[in-house]
Length: 259
Picture 1 (cartoon, rainbow, N blue to C red):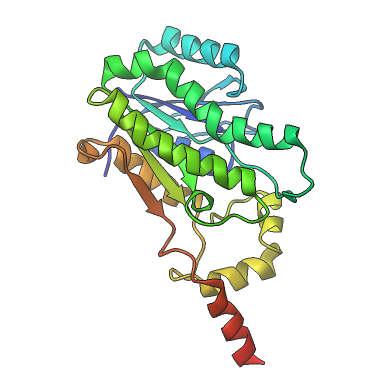
Picture 2: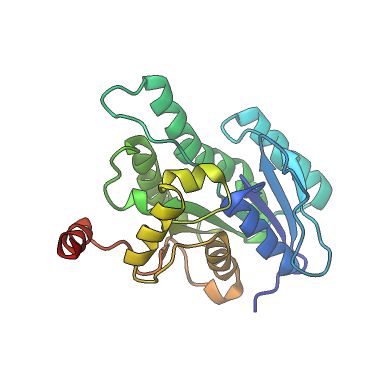
């Protein structure tokens, strides 16, 4: 449905999980796609059809010099940048009462400061191409996030930054965010976070869509936001979470009635 021939796309954290799905979607839509991360993907990321393969440039998006090197290398090869997807992020659960300041700083640096840094370094190229930025945020940024306080706060900050940058950098650069819901990936650690297969099944049973999201759901939203069909969409937060999470008391009530 969406075609991006002649366009150049950069996806941070693009070697696995949601990022890998985004990379594949843009490749399949005809774009030249670059992924970055601290570690190269275990296997090349290829389009679903056509044989196109993503380029990988190693970079830690928390480090200003490495980010500058990333943008310089991409522009040296392509001469342009049309779409930046700030996807790199995440953070394990931690007890807010005992977590170290260093841990909290690391989570905020990855989930908030890094997207701001990459956006800043890519600003000139995106302005020249009248491109766009897509920030991958989370439902943790719009509702309480017990156990992952720093992560939720950083994602809330990213949503605020999205609206501010959309106003400051418009009309040349559109800036939007995707509020990702519960996403199921192939990573074993991600499955353990939800309580394994039994936990996943219990969660999915209570969701309005009766399933968790998959990377392709987020990727499809990225294609729309990067396309000409979204030409007047900027400063928006697109919620991609299948109807949202029902209030927890409904689950408790269901469990009580089933006993």
